[in-house]
Length: 336
Ligand code: BTN
Image (cartoon, rainbow, N blue to C red; front, side, top):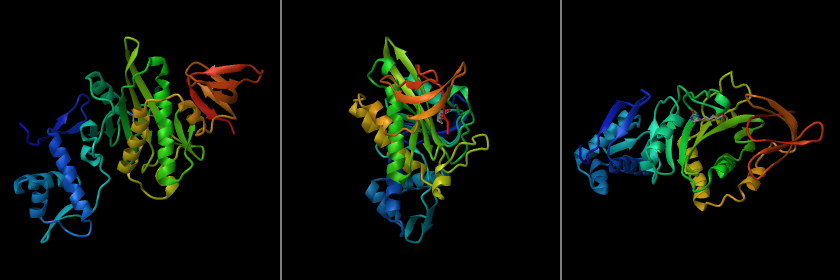
């Protein structure tokens, strides 16, 4: 195929349908075409101008335009030229300028965790992001299922922090702080964290986080962080204590903009590489401390007053008999 673009419909490891773009420059080209069309939101852009600005032949331009149409972009051809009638909330690599080569988008997948694990095992770069439009086998913490219908945002990021495995929990805390900050900044909503990494608004769950790590010679090889956010989907009746951004704001939101802003925030924190203050910053965003909680694992249940989160991310409880107990994992329920 050489440097030419090839879109193939193929079956991936999990038999979900994927689109494979064979040439990075072509992904960037699609982004550039869309940028020009978006900048002329009210008017058409002639094929001659597009070809000249992008330095591509008319044939190549037509090929890109028809592929974009097939992928759901409503590009009309008028007497004046091409017109982008509407900008769909698409998650293709070219919708994330500067990140194209690290974005893997699947309209449907079993679980982005599985795909990210395979990519990380094959040596993909840090900040590779696997996104799914919906998941058939979305996984939650503690072996639960994560309902992943269309409209939500489901993705897994591959991180490769230079740290001993015992400190890797800091990546999860950093990601939850980054997500809270993103929601607060973009929507001015009171998003807060429930220990360890659930994001709540009005005590209802908006987003959940799952992580998987691989170590090699006592170093972290990768920490994959999977995040599921209820955005334009309605949480199912099985998730009684859940909410979505659509329900909170009364309107639909852009998955692409939210993911883009979150990745900027999270990557900046990761690149800074100083996680010494992550627990203290996390404490400023949590609803869990200073209240009575119940923490359940598959083995036992602990109940107590949540007094602190220690430097290892463990929740410190004061039990009824006055003794202290540290809980390192589990499902935390806030008692009213
Ligand atoms: C939880 O709160 O239990 C964690 C939910 C994590 C769900 C996300 S959706 C993207 C990624 N893929 C999965 O299968 N799970 C995570």
